[in-house]
Image (cartoon, rainbow, N blue to C red):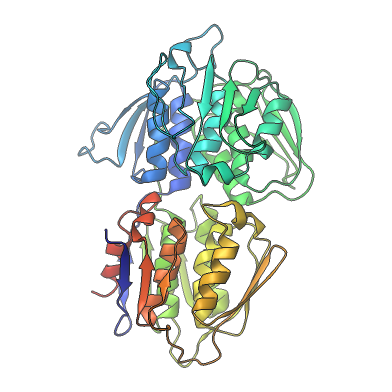
Length: 465
């Protein structure tokens, strides 16, 4: 793909019915659960993009066989057969075998070729890094995990600290609190942990997924609110599908995972709700347009599917069925209304809502989104910079961000403006929406969408047809 990509505005309302690729969040979780499980799992509709590719590569290097041709499938790369047993082959069932020892080359972030086999560089795949940090604690041998320069700036102490409390031996190989890490497996045990509020729910999900293989299981007690509860609930639901039922306090202050073993399962991955949000938002900001997302409805495990309700609160029409969501844009003379919303439960939707806010009447305030600072880039700073360049007034107060659109409803994009994406897929996809309404929108580094949605711009073009 070229260095920049120009979005052509739509000439009028559109009507579309789409099924985006599989969920990144679901894909990364079921890949690990299938690898830990006894037996062979069939995973259909998994996401074929950079982030899950890093997870798959790492699991293969750890000794897991992943076949792209699941029985009965046409051989799609989105249908996988995963032979479990990641935690077999040592003196205690529940440990990675010593022959799967990995050593990652830390100086250049490339694979190494020493004894113990080549390692996988995890790039900027934060989910894979966090989940595998916990999983490697179950192993036998030493594991060194690294990523690109940005990964070395993404904090990991809120996962390392509780793992250490359980007995895991983990060393920081650079700055304390950040990757790269050296993990010596085989020392972790079960028990009870008291968790303070965390920057990311992925730390909690990482602990929960390995919990059945800890002696006596694991109990997590939370002092304060849990970040992005829907993602933790997603993890627990998937664990149940693989045979491990957790006990969850109704107030979500305590979770107990019993000791046990996952069992192989067949699982169909839903379309990615985060990816779907861009097309639902497009329908909301292009007057009288209509977009239906197939395969995603009120039965979804993904919290981000509730973004349609946010658009509804702003004035769009919303129809939610068991397996589909439809958003209908209001008439041109009835613009969307700004909204004040706590987005702790759906922080990834902040970038989509930020661009929708440019076409709403009044100020839109997104609260409790401080964890955006430790994503692929500092998203709060990036949003402030790029929205301001488009003429919006942006205000950051603590963990809250407010956006007031340009005062002139017929505002235009300043000539020569190129939206910087900061190697962040959601910056590219979120700001692309602006170009559907306003002419002259140019996206820098469009290929960054490969992280989760390689075909995003092809899907976007379908709206014009």
